[in-house]
Structure formats: C-alpha cells, structure tokens
Length: 233
Image (tube, one colour):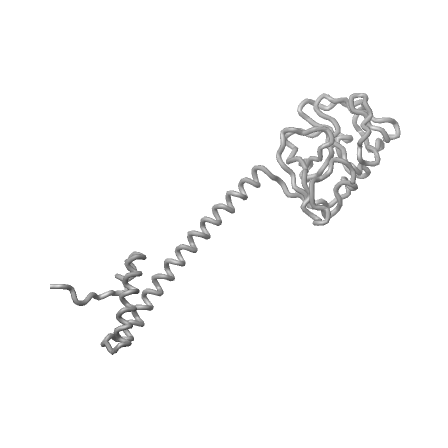
C-alpha cells in the first residue's frame, strides 16, 4: 500500500540534506497551490512548516559565515606571523638625532637583514631604548676624525657623504683612532649634538644582537611616504 501521508517534525526537518529540503519546498509549493484551488490543506500548518525551513536555512548560513570568519582569522594570523618574522619593528621617531633624514613624528618600517653596510640606517636596542643610527664603520675598520670634528675618516679615507653637521668631537670619550671590534658596527647620529652613539664608551660599538633591523621605508606622513634615503634630505 502506497504511503499517503508523512509527518515532518521539527527535528526531522533539521536533519534533511539540501537536496531533500529543495524537494520538500517544491512539494510544499504544490500543496499551497492546491489549497489555492480549493484544497483542504491547513494554512497554519504550512506556515509552521515554513518557519522550520527558514530556521534550517538560517543555521546553514550562520555556520557558513562562522567558517568564513574562522578562515579569515587564520589568514590574518598567518600574515601577522610573517610580518613579525620578516618586518619588525614599526618605529615612531620622537627625537632629533636623525634630523635631516628622519623627523619627529615620522613612522618607519625596518626589516631584518644580515647584510649591513656603511651608510645603512639601523634600529638599535641600547640601554633599554630603541634608537636609530647610521652605520659608519664595519668590523675591523679604523675610525678617526680631525680636531674640529668636522671631518670623519674611515681607514684613513675621509667620509665625504656623511649627512650630518659632523661627528662633534667634543662628545668623544673613546680613544682615537678607534678600531671597530669583531662582529660589531660603529654608528653615529646624523645630528650628533646631545645624543649618544659609538663616540661614547657608554654606547660603544653595536653588536649583531642589538640590531633590530634596517630602516628602509617611511609610512608616515603620507606626503613623505616612500623608501628612506640613505643620505640627508
């Protein structure tokens, strides 16, 4: 004997697949059409049934959105990890030690690099602070300056492109000529007056472990957005 009726409870509807739901909706439409033609279908039951279907669709959309959000968060986390590994840190300039190249309020990016060269700007951890200084001498180089501090010499060759006003010999308390220690860098501020750098014993030559990264790009202000030049602007 063919089945004449089938009871669709709320729990049963929730277990239906998408294809089964589609077939059921079509069946419901046919029933409603029959009611419109004078059939005996209870409209109240149809409304209750439709409410269950709507809840089923809502749950499916909700779960889909949850999966999308989780996927998005995973991607964002992955990007954050890449940035943390490759680009660090983002720095805001507060002082005037690099005035002429970097100004107060500038925000710059630095990248990890094992290829530090003369003239590079590097972010350095020193005495609990992070400062930016320019690399002047590499491991083994000899550094000296004239009595006035206007001329700077690396391996007996005058450094012609030093961007600042001069290394300010009055602040020097290291013995000159000075040879850069192995695995270290001699760094100076572009605007040295009142700022510490490798001219002083308290700051000294910078070790590899102190270097947080090479400063390469300015992201603020927008009218100066772009690569950080390796000479005074």
